[in-house]
Image 1: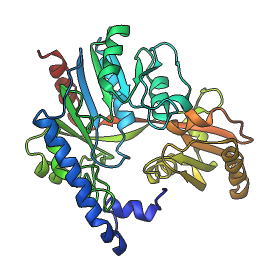
Image 2: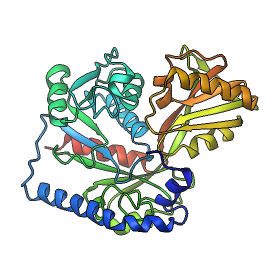
Image 3: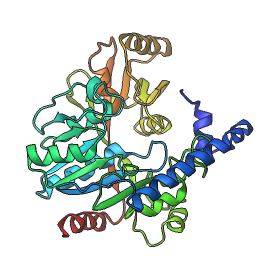
Image 4: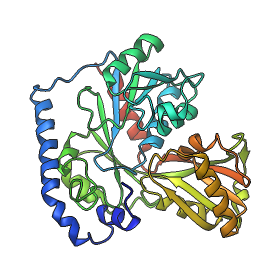
Length: 362
């Protein structure tokens, strides 16, 4: 079910929650109770936690999405590769036709699965990380074993792994929104939390994403109250590069200046994409926000072209996550892709030192 922008903002705590959502509060209590019991069962050893044959760094969140896990995983994997570490990324392959099966998305030199098979996020990581194997599978311990056996992997980065307690990890990194790290404070379906706020105590470090460049993060105090003493690192989504959808050739950012544009995205939080484009000088005549992980069709491509005609736009701009699925379609208008990278704004050296320390420890 696709939620309205107003509803998403309410769940995130940015506006008042509609009164009828309070009728769902008992369901939220039940959801929270299940999460608490599950975490305790893992802690007490009733549910088995498996040790991978390599070091494991988990990246995840406790909200429903939109914190920037994919760009942060890409940043972390690049850092480890550049540091001389044999690293692989493990992901579930969400919304792909092969979701759940242990499969090699990329061996580091070539992509082995299509975006429809692996899902858009896994496909994007494979394209963005040359030299880094990307492996998908719901049983991450099996995926980790495959990474070690086939690629000699020393460290795996576990994408969206905060709730995946079946795999032991050496470092647990929690991503949270810099303004409202716990949404409106309620667990789904009344709020945006996957687990009660207390689950944040499992984190070894917290990265506050979408932070302002002055690093004044309204949500930092709330995080430190929930997880006393945890190191907190502000980060933001920074502009990477602009390139053509059809051939991935670079295009200068000046391409966007005063150009009438249709913004196309299928994100958990599409609002920031339009703001970034406008900040780069694009004139957004229409914004087309599809549901997160939307599976684009030829009909959608026709609809996007038609919207460009109707709104007087001469170019189409989309995200890298959407581009992996849109690249197979032909557009009458020029189509461009805006790359977004994760930039750690403060204490980046300290974060990277923490990562190296954990993977070098016995």
